[in-house]
Length: 238
Image (cartoon, rainbow, N blue to C red):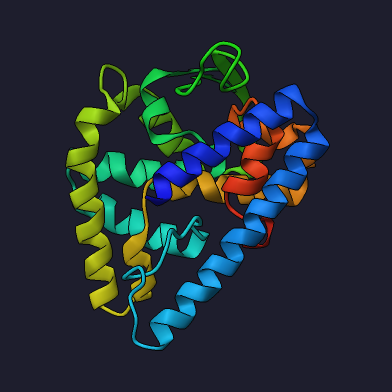
């Protein structure tokens, strides 16, 4: 399964980087990426020839501002609690980069977001139990700031495991309506809440040096290579 392959690949890359060298880890990732590219090209050829293949396309790993604002506005218009929370995640996620589940254990102290790294395992995963993000309000739109502030409050006492089954159908229904109305393209039916974090990574890669750990620090990764090879591409930045 694709998810299993990604997990095995990440584990192997982590071991190489930790016990051999960053160069060896980079070479490993490049070789795996080339294998993946050839595999996708072969699969594309099968589909063109009438063979099998993954139906509906792959992961989007992006959430452009024009699209997310259309979606968030429609979610807000529902006037429901779940519509409000879903809209806030869609609006604030790409500018702050939190995993959806992390909002439940995040506090806002002045202009500093204290985020509990949801994937932290001492000595293995994430760059510490908590990461701090300085909120540059001058670079955020007023509605993005409001969405952030609401999320910090509304997610307290909730868990993503309980919320996701409520929020996902709302998001899918709204996107379906927007696609049916010709407002956004059909491809956005594959949009996930997590794609907000991919968009954040793409924006960081456009302004920071991913190989020196700057992107990893902002995203809560232990390895600089995680964001470099597994998150939104720099060219998707806006």
